[in-house]
Image (cartoon, rainbow, N blue to C red):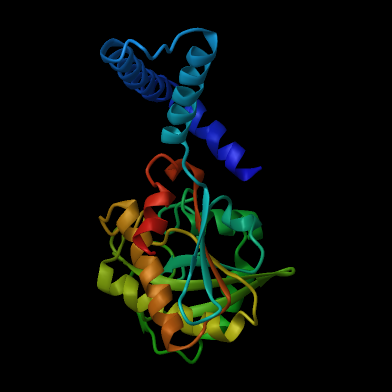
Length: 279
C-alpha cells in the first residue's frame, strides 16, 4: 500500500515532470523503431499493439522517475539494529520519542520556544501549553547535574550542559528531551554546530540505551529547525545515521532506531539516494 501512496504523491506533486519523462521515453522508442524499420525494411513494427506497448513502457518510465520511497531500512552490519527512515508524524510512532531542546530546557511558548518547533508542538500536544508537569520532571532529573544561572531576557535562567537528557512521561508515552543547542540569553535565539550536535547525540544514545528496553527510539531530523546547522537536509540525515551507527558499534542502543521526517521535506529528500549511500 505504501509504494502506491508514494507513487501517487510523486505523480500529484510532479505532473509535468511525469509527462516530460513519459514523452522523452516515447520519443526514444519511436526513434529506435523508425531507425530499425528504415535500415532493415524486412522488419515491420506497426499497428495498435506496438503502439500500446510503446506507450505503456513510456508511462511506466515516467512514473518510475517521479516515484520516491517514503520509508527505507538500513541494517547495521554484524548486529541486530536497523535504522529506519520514514516520512510521518513523530508523535504517532511506537516507542520512545526524542525531543530536541535548548540548554535551558525552556517550556514557555513564544520567544523561548517557538510553537512551530517540535519542542513547541510537544508542549502543546502533551501539556496543552501548561508545562508545570514538564518542568517538574526536568527539575527532578537534573537536580544533580552541574548547571549555572544566566541572566536571560525571557524563559528559564538555569543553563545545563549540551547533551543533558531527561525522560519525560506523559500518560503511557515516553519522551527523551535532550539539550542539543545553545540559546542567546539576550534574544532566546537558538544555535548549534556539527560538533555540538555530535556531542548531544552521543549523550542521547547513552540515555536511550538505558531507557529503551527493546522499544524503538524515534527522533526527528534534529538540527533542521530553528537551530539549523546550515547543512542540506540530506547531509544532516546522513550525520544522524552515522552517529547512530557509530554508537551502535560501541554497544547496541536498541534494535530499531527510527528517524521520522516531516512530509514537507518529501521533495527535498530522496531516500533511494540515502539507502544507496549506506549500502
